[in-house]
Length: 175
Image (cartoon, rainbow, N blue to C red; front, side, top):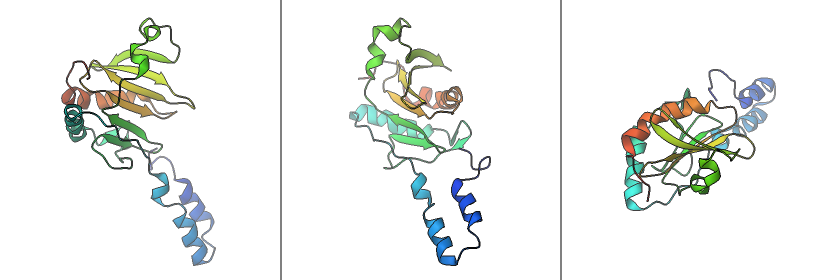
């Protein structure tokens, strides 16, 4: 979420309680610390070759994706990145998703998974429970997963990430 477009809910709470004693105000502000908003992401465990490709990807990832500023998830790793809140999460070096080799997806018979491409990068799109989408690169030497929460323009996300993926992750078959 872009902080210039939307006021953080804690800011509204602080303004509502401005007449409370200072101690109550401090408790309210402490309860809204940025640590509460930090995203988390499981760090993948790829082999050394893929980990090197992922470190190269981390170096060329854009500072903003879909208008959101980069704010990496915890724990910090060159294999993960994030933008905005709720976070768009990228994980590099993930295992091949089972749906990537499912014949129903290739034949267009799976309503929850679709193969396609954006700006020269092939992706498998899977709808997630609770909304949002998971995208995983295909035909690249490493699998890169991007999770876009519900309400995020996923086409904008993939367009913004395409150049970095093309630059850092060569075409080929992931091991």
